[in-house]
Length: 201
Image 1: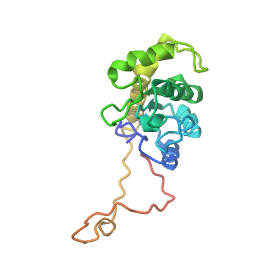
Image 2 (image 1 turned 90 degrees about the vertical axis):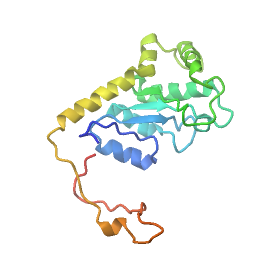
Image 3 (image 1 turned 30 degrees about the vertical axis):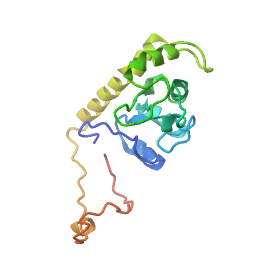
Image 4 (image 1 turned 60 degrees about the vertical axis):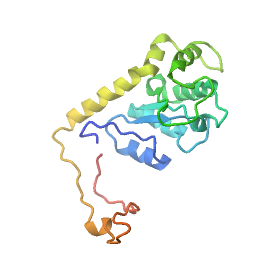
């Protein structure tokens, strides 16, 4: 993926996979729609030890607005602000973005029901409160999209540096894929056996 210039998205993976990807990726990674585990302990959210490593990696976590990832069914815009500010404190202002997920969830926080509410979110971030410093205009621009554009450029730069690198293409034996059962022709429950061979993504 690094060689092809694909962004590596770790929003839908376990904490172990998050760390494994951060171990091997040469390019910045993204969380396209996740939030902070320290603020709300849901497995889809990133723990602080991952956020620290994300900063070192140069990646970005884009905060999700799904109520059940933010604070439960009664989530509000203020809960989203807590996630954004916590990530800024742990990973830094250059590593947080917005991943609202309006097209993928059925319950949004009160005050962030649709995209028309983005100005309210940015207005609140620009004000003091919640025990956090107000956001500057430049930092709000980073949150709104400049951070993601930076990551995109970095991913392209890594790909350009790997253009002569051969892909890692170890084939999975057919007998591991097909069980010849007419009701189920493909298995997805492969066990992973570590090797001494380096693996690049």
